[in-house]
Amino acid sequence: MKLALYQGPGLINDPAASFLLLAEKAREAKAQGANLLILPEMFLSGYNIGPENARKHAVTQQGLAPAQAIAQAQNIALAFGYPERVGADVANSAILLGPDGKILLNYRKSHLFGELDRAMFKAIGDEFPIAELHGFKIGLLICYDIEFPEPARRLALQGADIILIPTAQMQPYEQVARHVLPARAYENQVYTAYANHSGDDDGLSYVGLSSICGPDGTVLAMAGRGPEMLFAEFTHAHQNAVRAADPFFTDRRPSLYGPVSSP
Amino acid sequence: MKLALYQGPGLINDPAASFLLLAEKAREAKAQGANLLILPEMFLSGYNIGPENARKHAVTQQGLAPAQAIAQAQNIALAFGYPERVGADVANSAILLGPDGKILLNYRKSHLFGELDRAMFKAIGDEFPIAELHGFKIGLLICYDIEFPEPARRLALQGADIILIPTAQMQPYEQVARHVLPARAYENQVYTAYANHSGDDDGLSYVGLSSICGPDGTVLAMAGRGPEMLFAEFTHAHQNAVRAADPFFTDRRPSLYGPVSSP
Image (cartoon, rainbow over all chains, first blue to last red; front, side, top):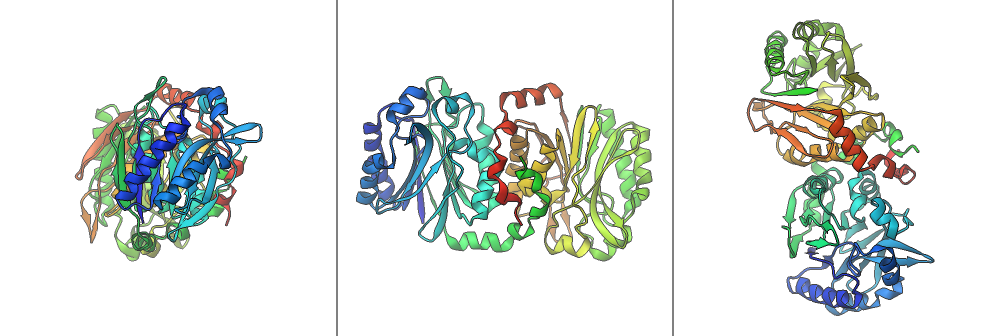
């Protein structure tokens, strides 16, 4: 399977233009043979938009119909972040659409980042769903979630082969892009794709440095600071070889890990 | 507190010479103002020595009296690995001695690495003890333990400020040295010191690349491939500032992490 990752500045408070950008990037990715395109957190509205705009642009999954049409038209799977209306609340969500436009996964960010997130969103998410695409089991996390080892571990324990992470990762947290992502890939023997914004956004300075990592922790592709499209091939053969060489999941000793999940 | 880290080739099957080397490196570290010196896994005997030699050189904690005398004579804390005799078994252990020579911590590797470890050692360890030195709470892990997120997390949840990791880390696992260590430091907001062997050892090619990382994931010092002494300053002020800026441990959601500790 070939993965494409788009890093770029968000189109702030302009979902209509964001759908057009999504269509353009889906075409570009498909032209390069990609089967799946991942884009940043809150791609449809921009991230740092404040609670009023987050509420204004929040949609239910039905509001993603234009993206479903794009996926189907280009025959490419799409993963991106958006503000989700959930009853009276807004969740920071990410969706995975199949190449037929169907919704495969919807994930709600479970770890909110500081006042920035908490002013806009509720942490409605306490599920870590998994879907299958081209024989790979895929899970979603969003930004701050990946800085905690436990959510990625949960996905891996549920059998995830790939973790897709739309993000809006700003200075001074460059260590996350440089080290935490390859570490998560290595320790869980999964492919990771971490799709960030670039540029500045109302006082935030995004680090860029989006990455795609392999199940042995190798950085397969890493972006610079500006807009960029990354590509990488994921194969079952490589992932199986990594897992066969190092049986991390049989060497784990969960009976020693009780305090990790104790309240 | 000033930490010193010694990376070098092990002295294979020669504990007497290893104690002499320990005395020499303790003097060097002390001359640079260090309060604590960490050395590699199985420093006293060499690592890749096979089960017969591991048994032959295994000692109880009483057998570490020469190291206690060195710590006391140089007034420096020492942490290093050794084969520990535990009843009829041998554990892959690490000790932390105070600057007065007293034993502060003894840790037994809880995650054995492949047939190499299993042929020599029993995984007797299921405790993660912590001791205090210069106001820092210190825990020990050994090599493969750090590749799992859970043991370091346990130590951090018990209040560890510093995790010392004697190691014998070989090719092709360079991602661990480059990425997993800074990630563990970052996600747990702890100082880490990862002291590796250098050179070759009966078919193993050690990666070197020992490191000292800060609680924000910054690599404070990293060795090359050969013998080297690293130094870094640890301060409460910096660690407190990192923890105040990002409340990872109040943002955790342990109620979601049950599967991580499920058998």
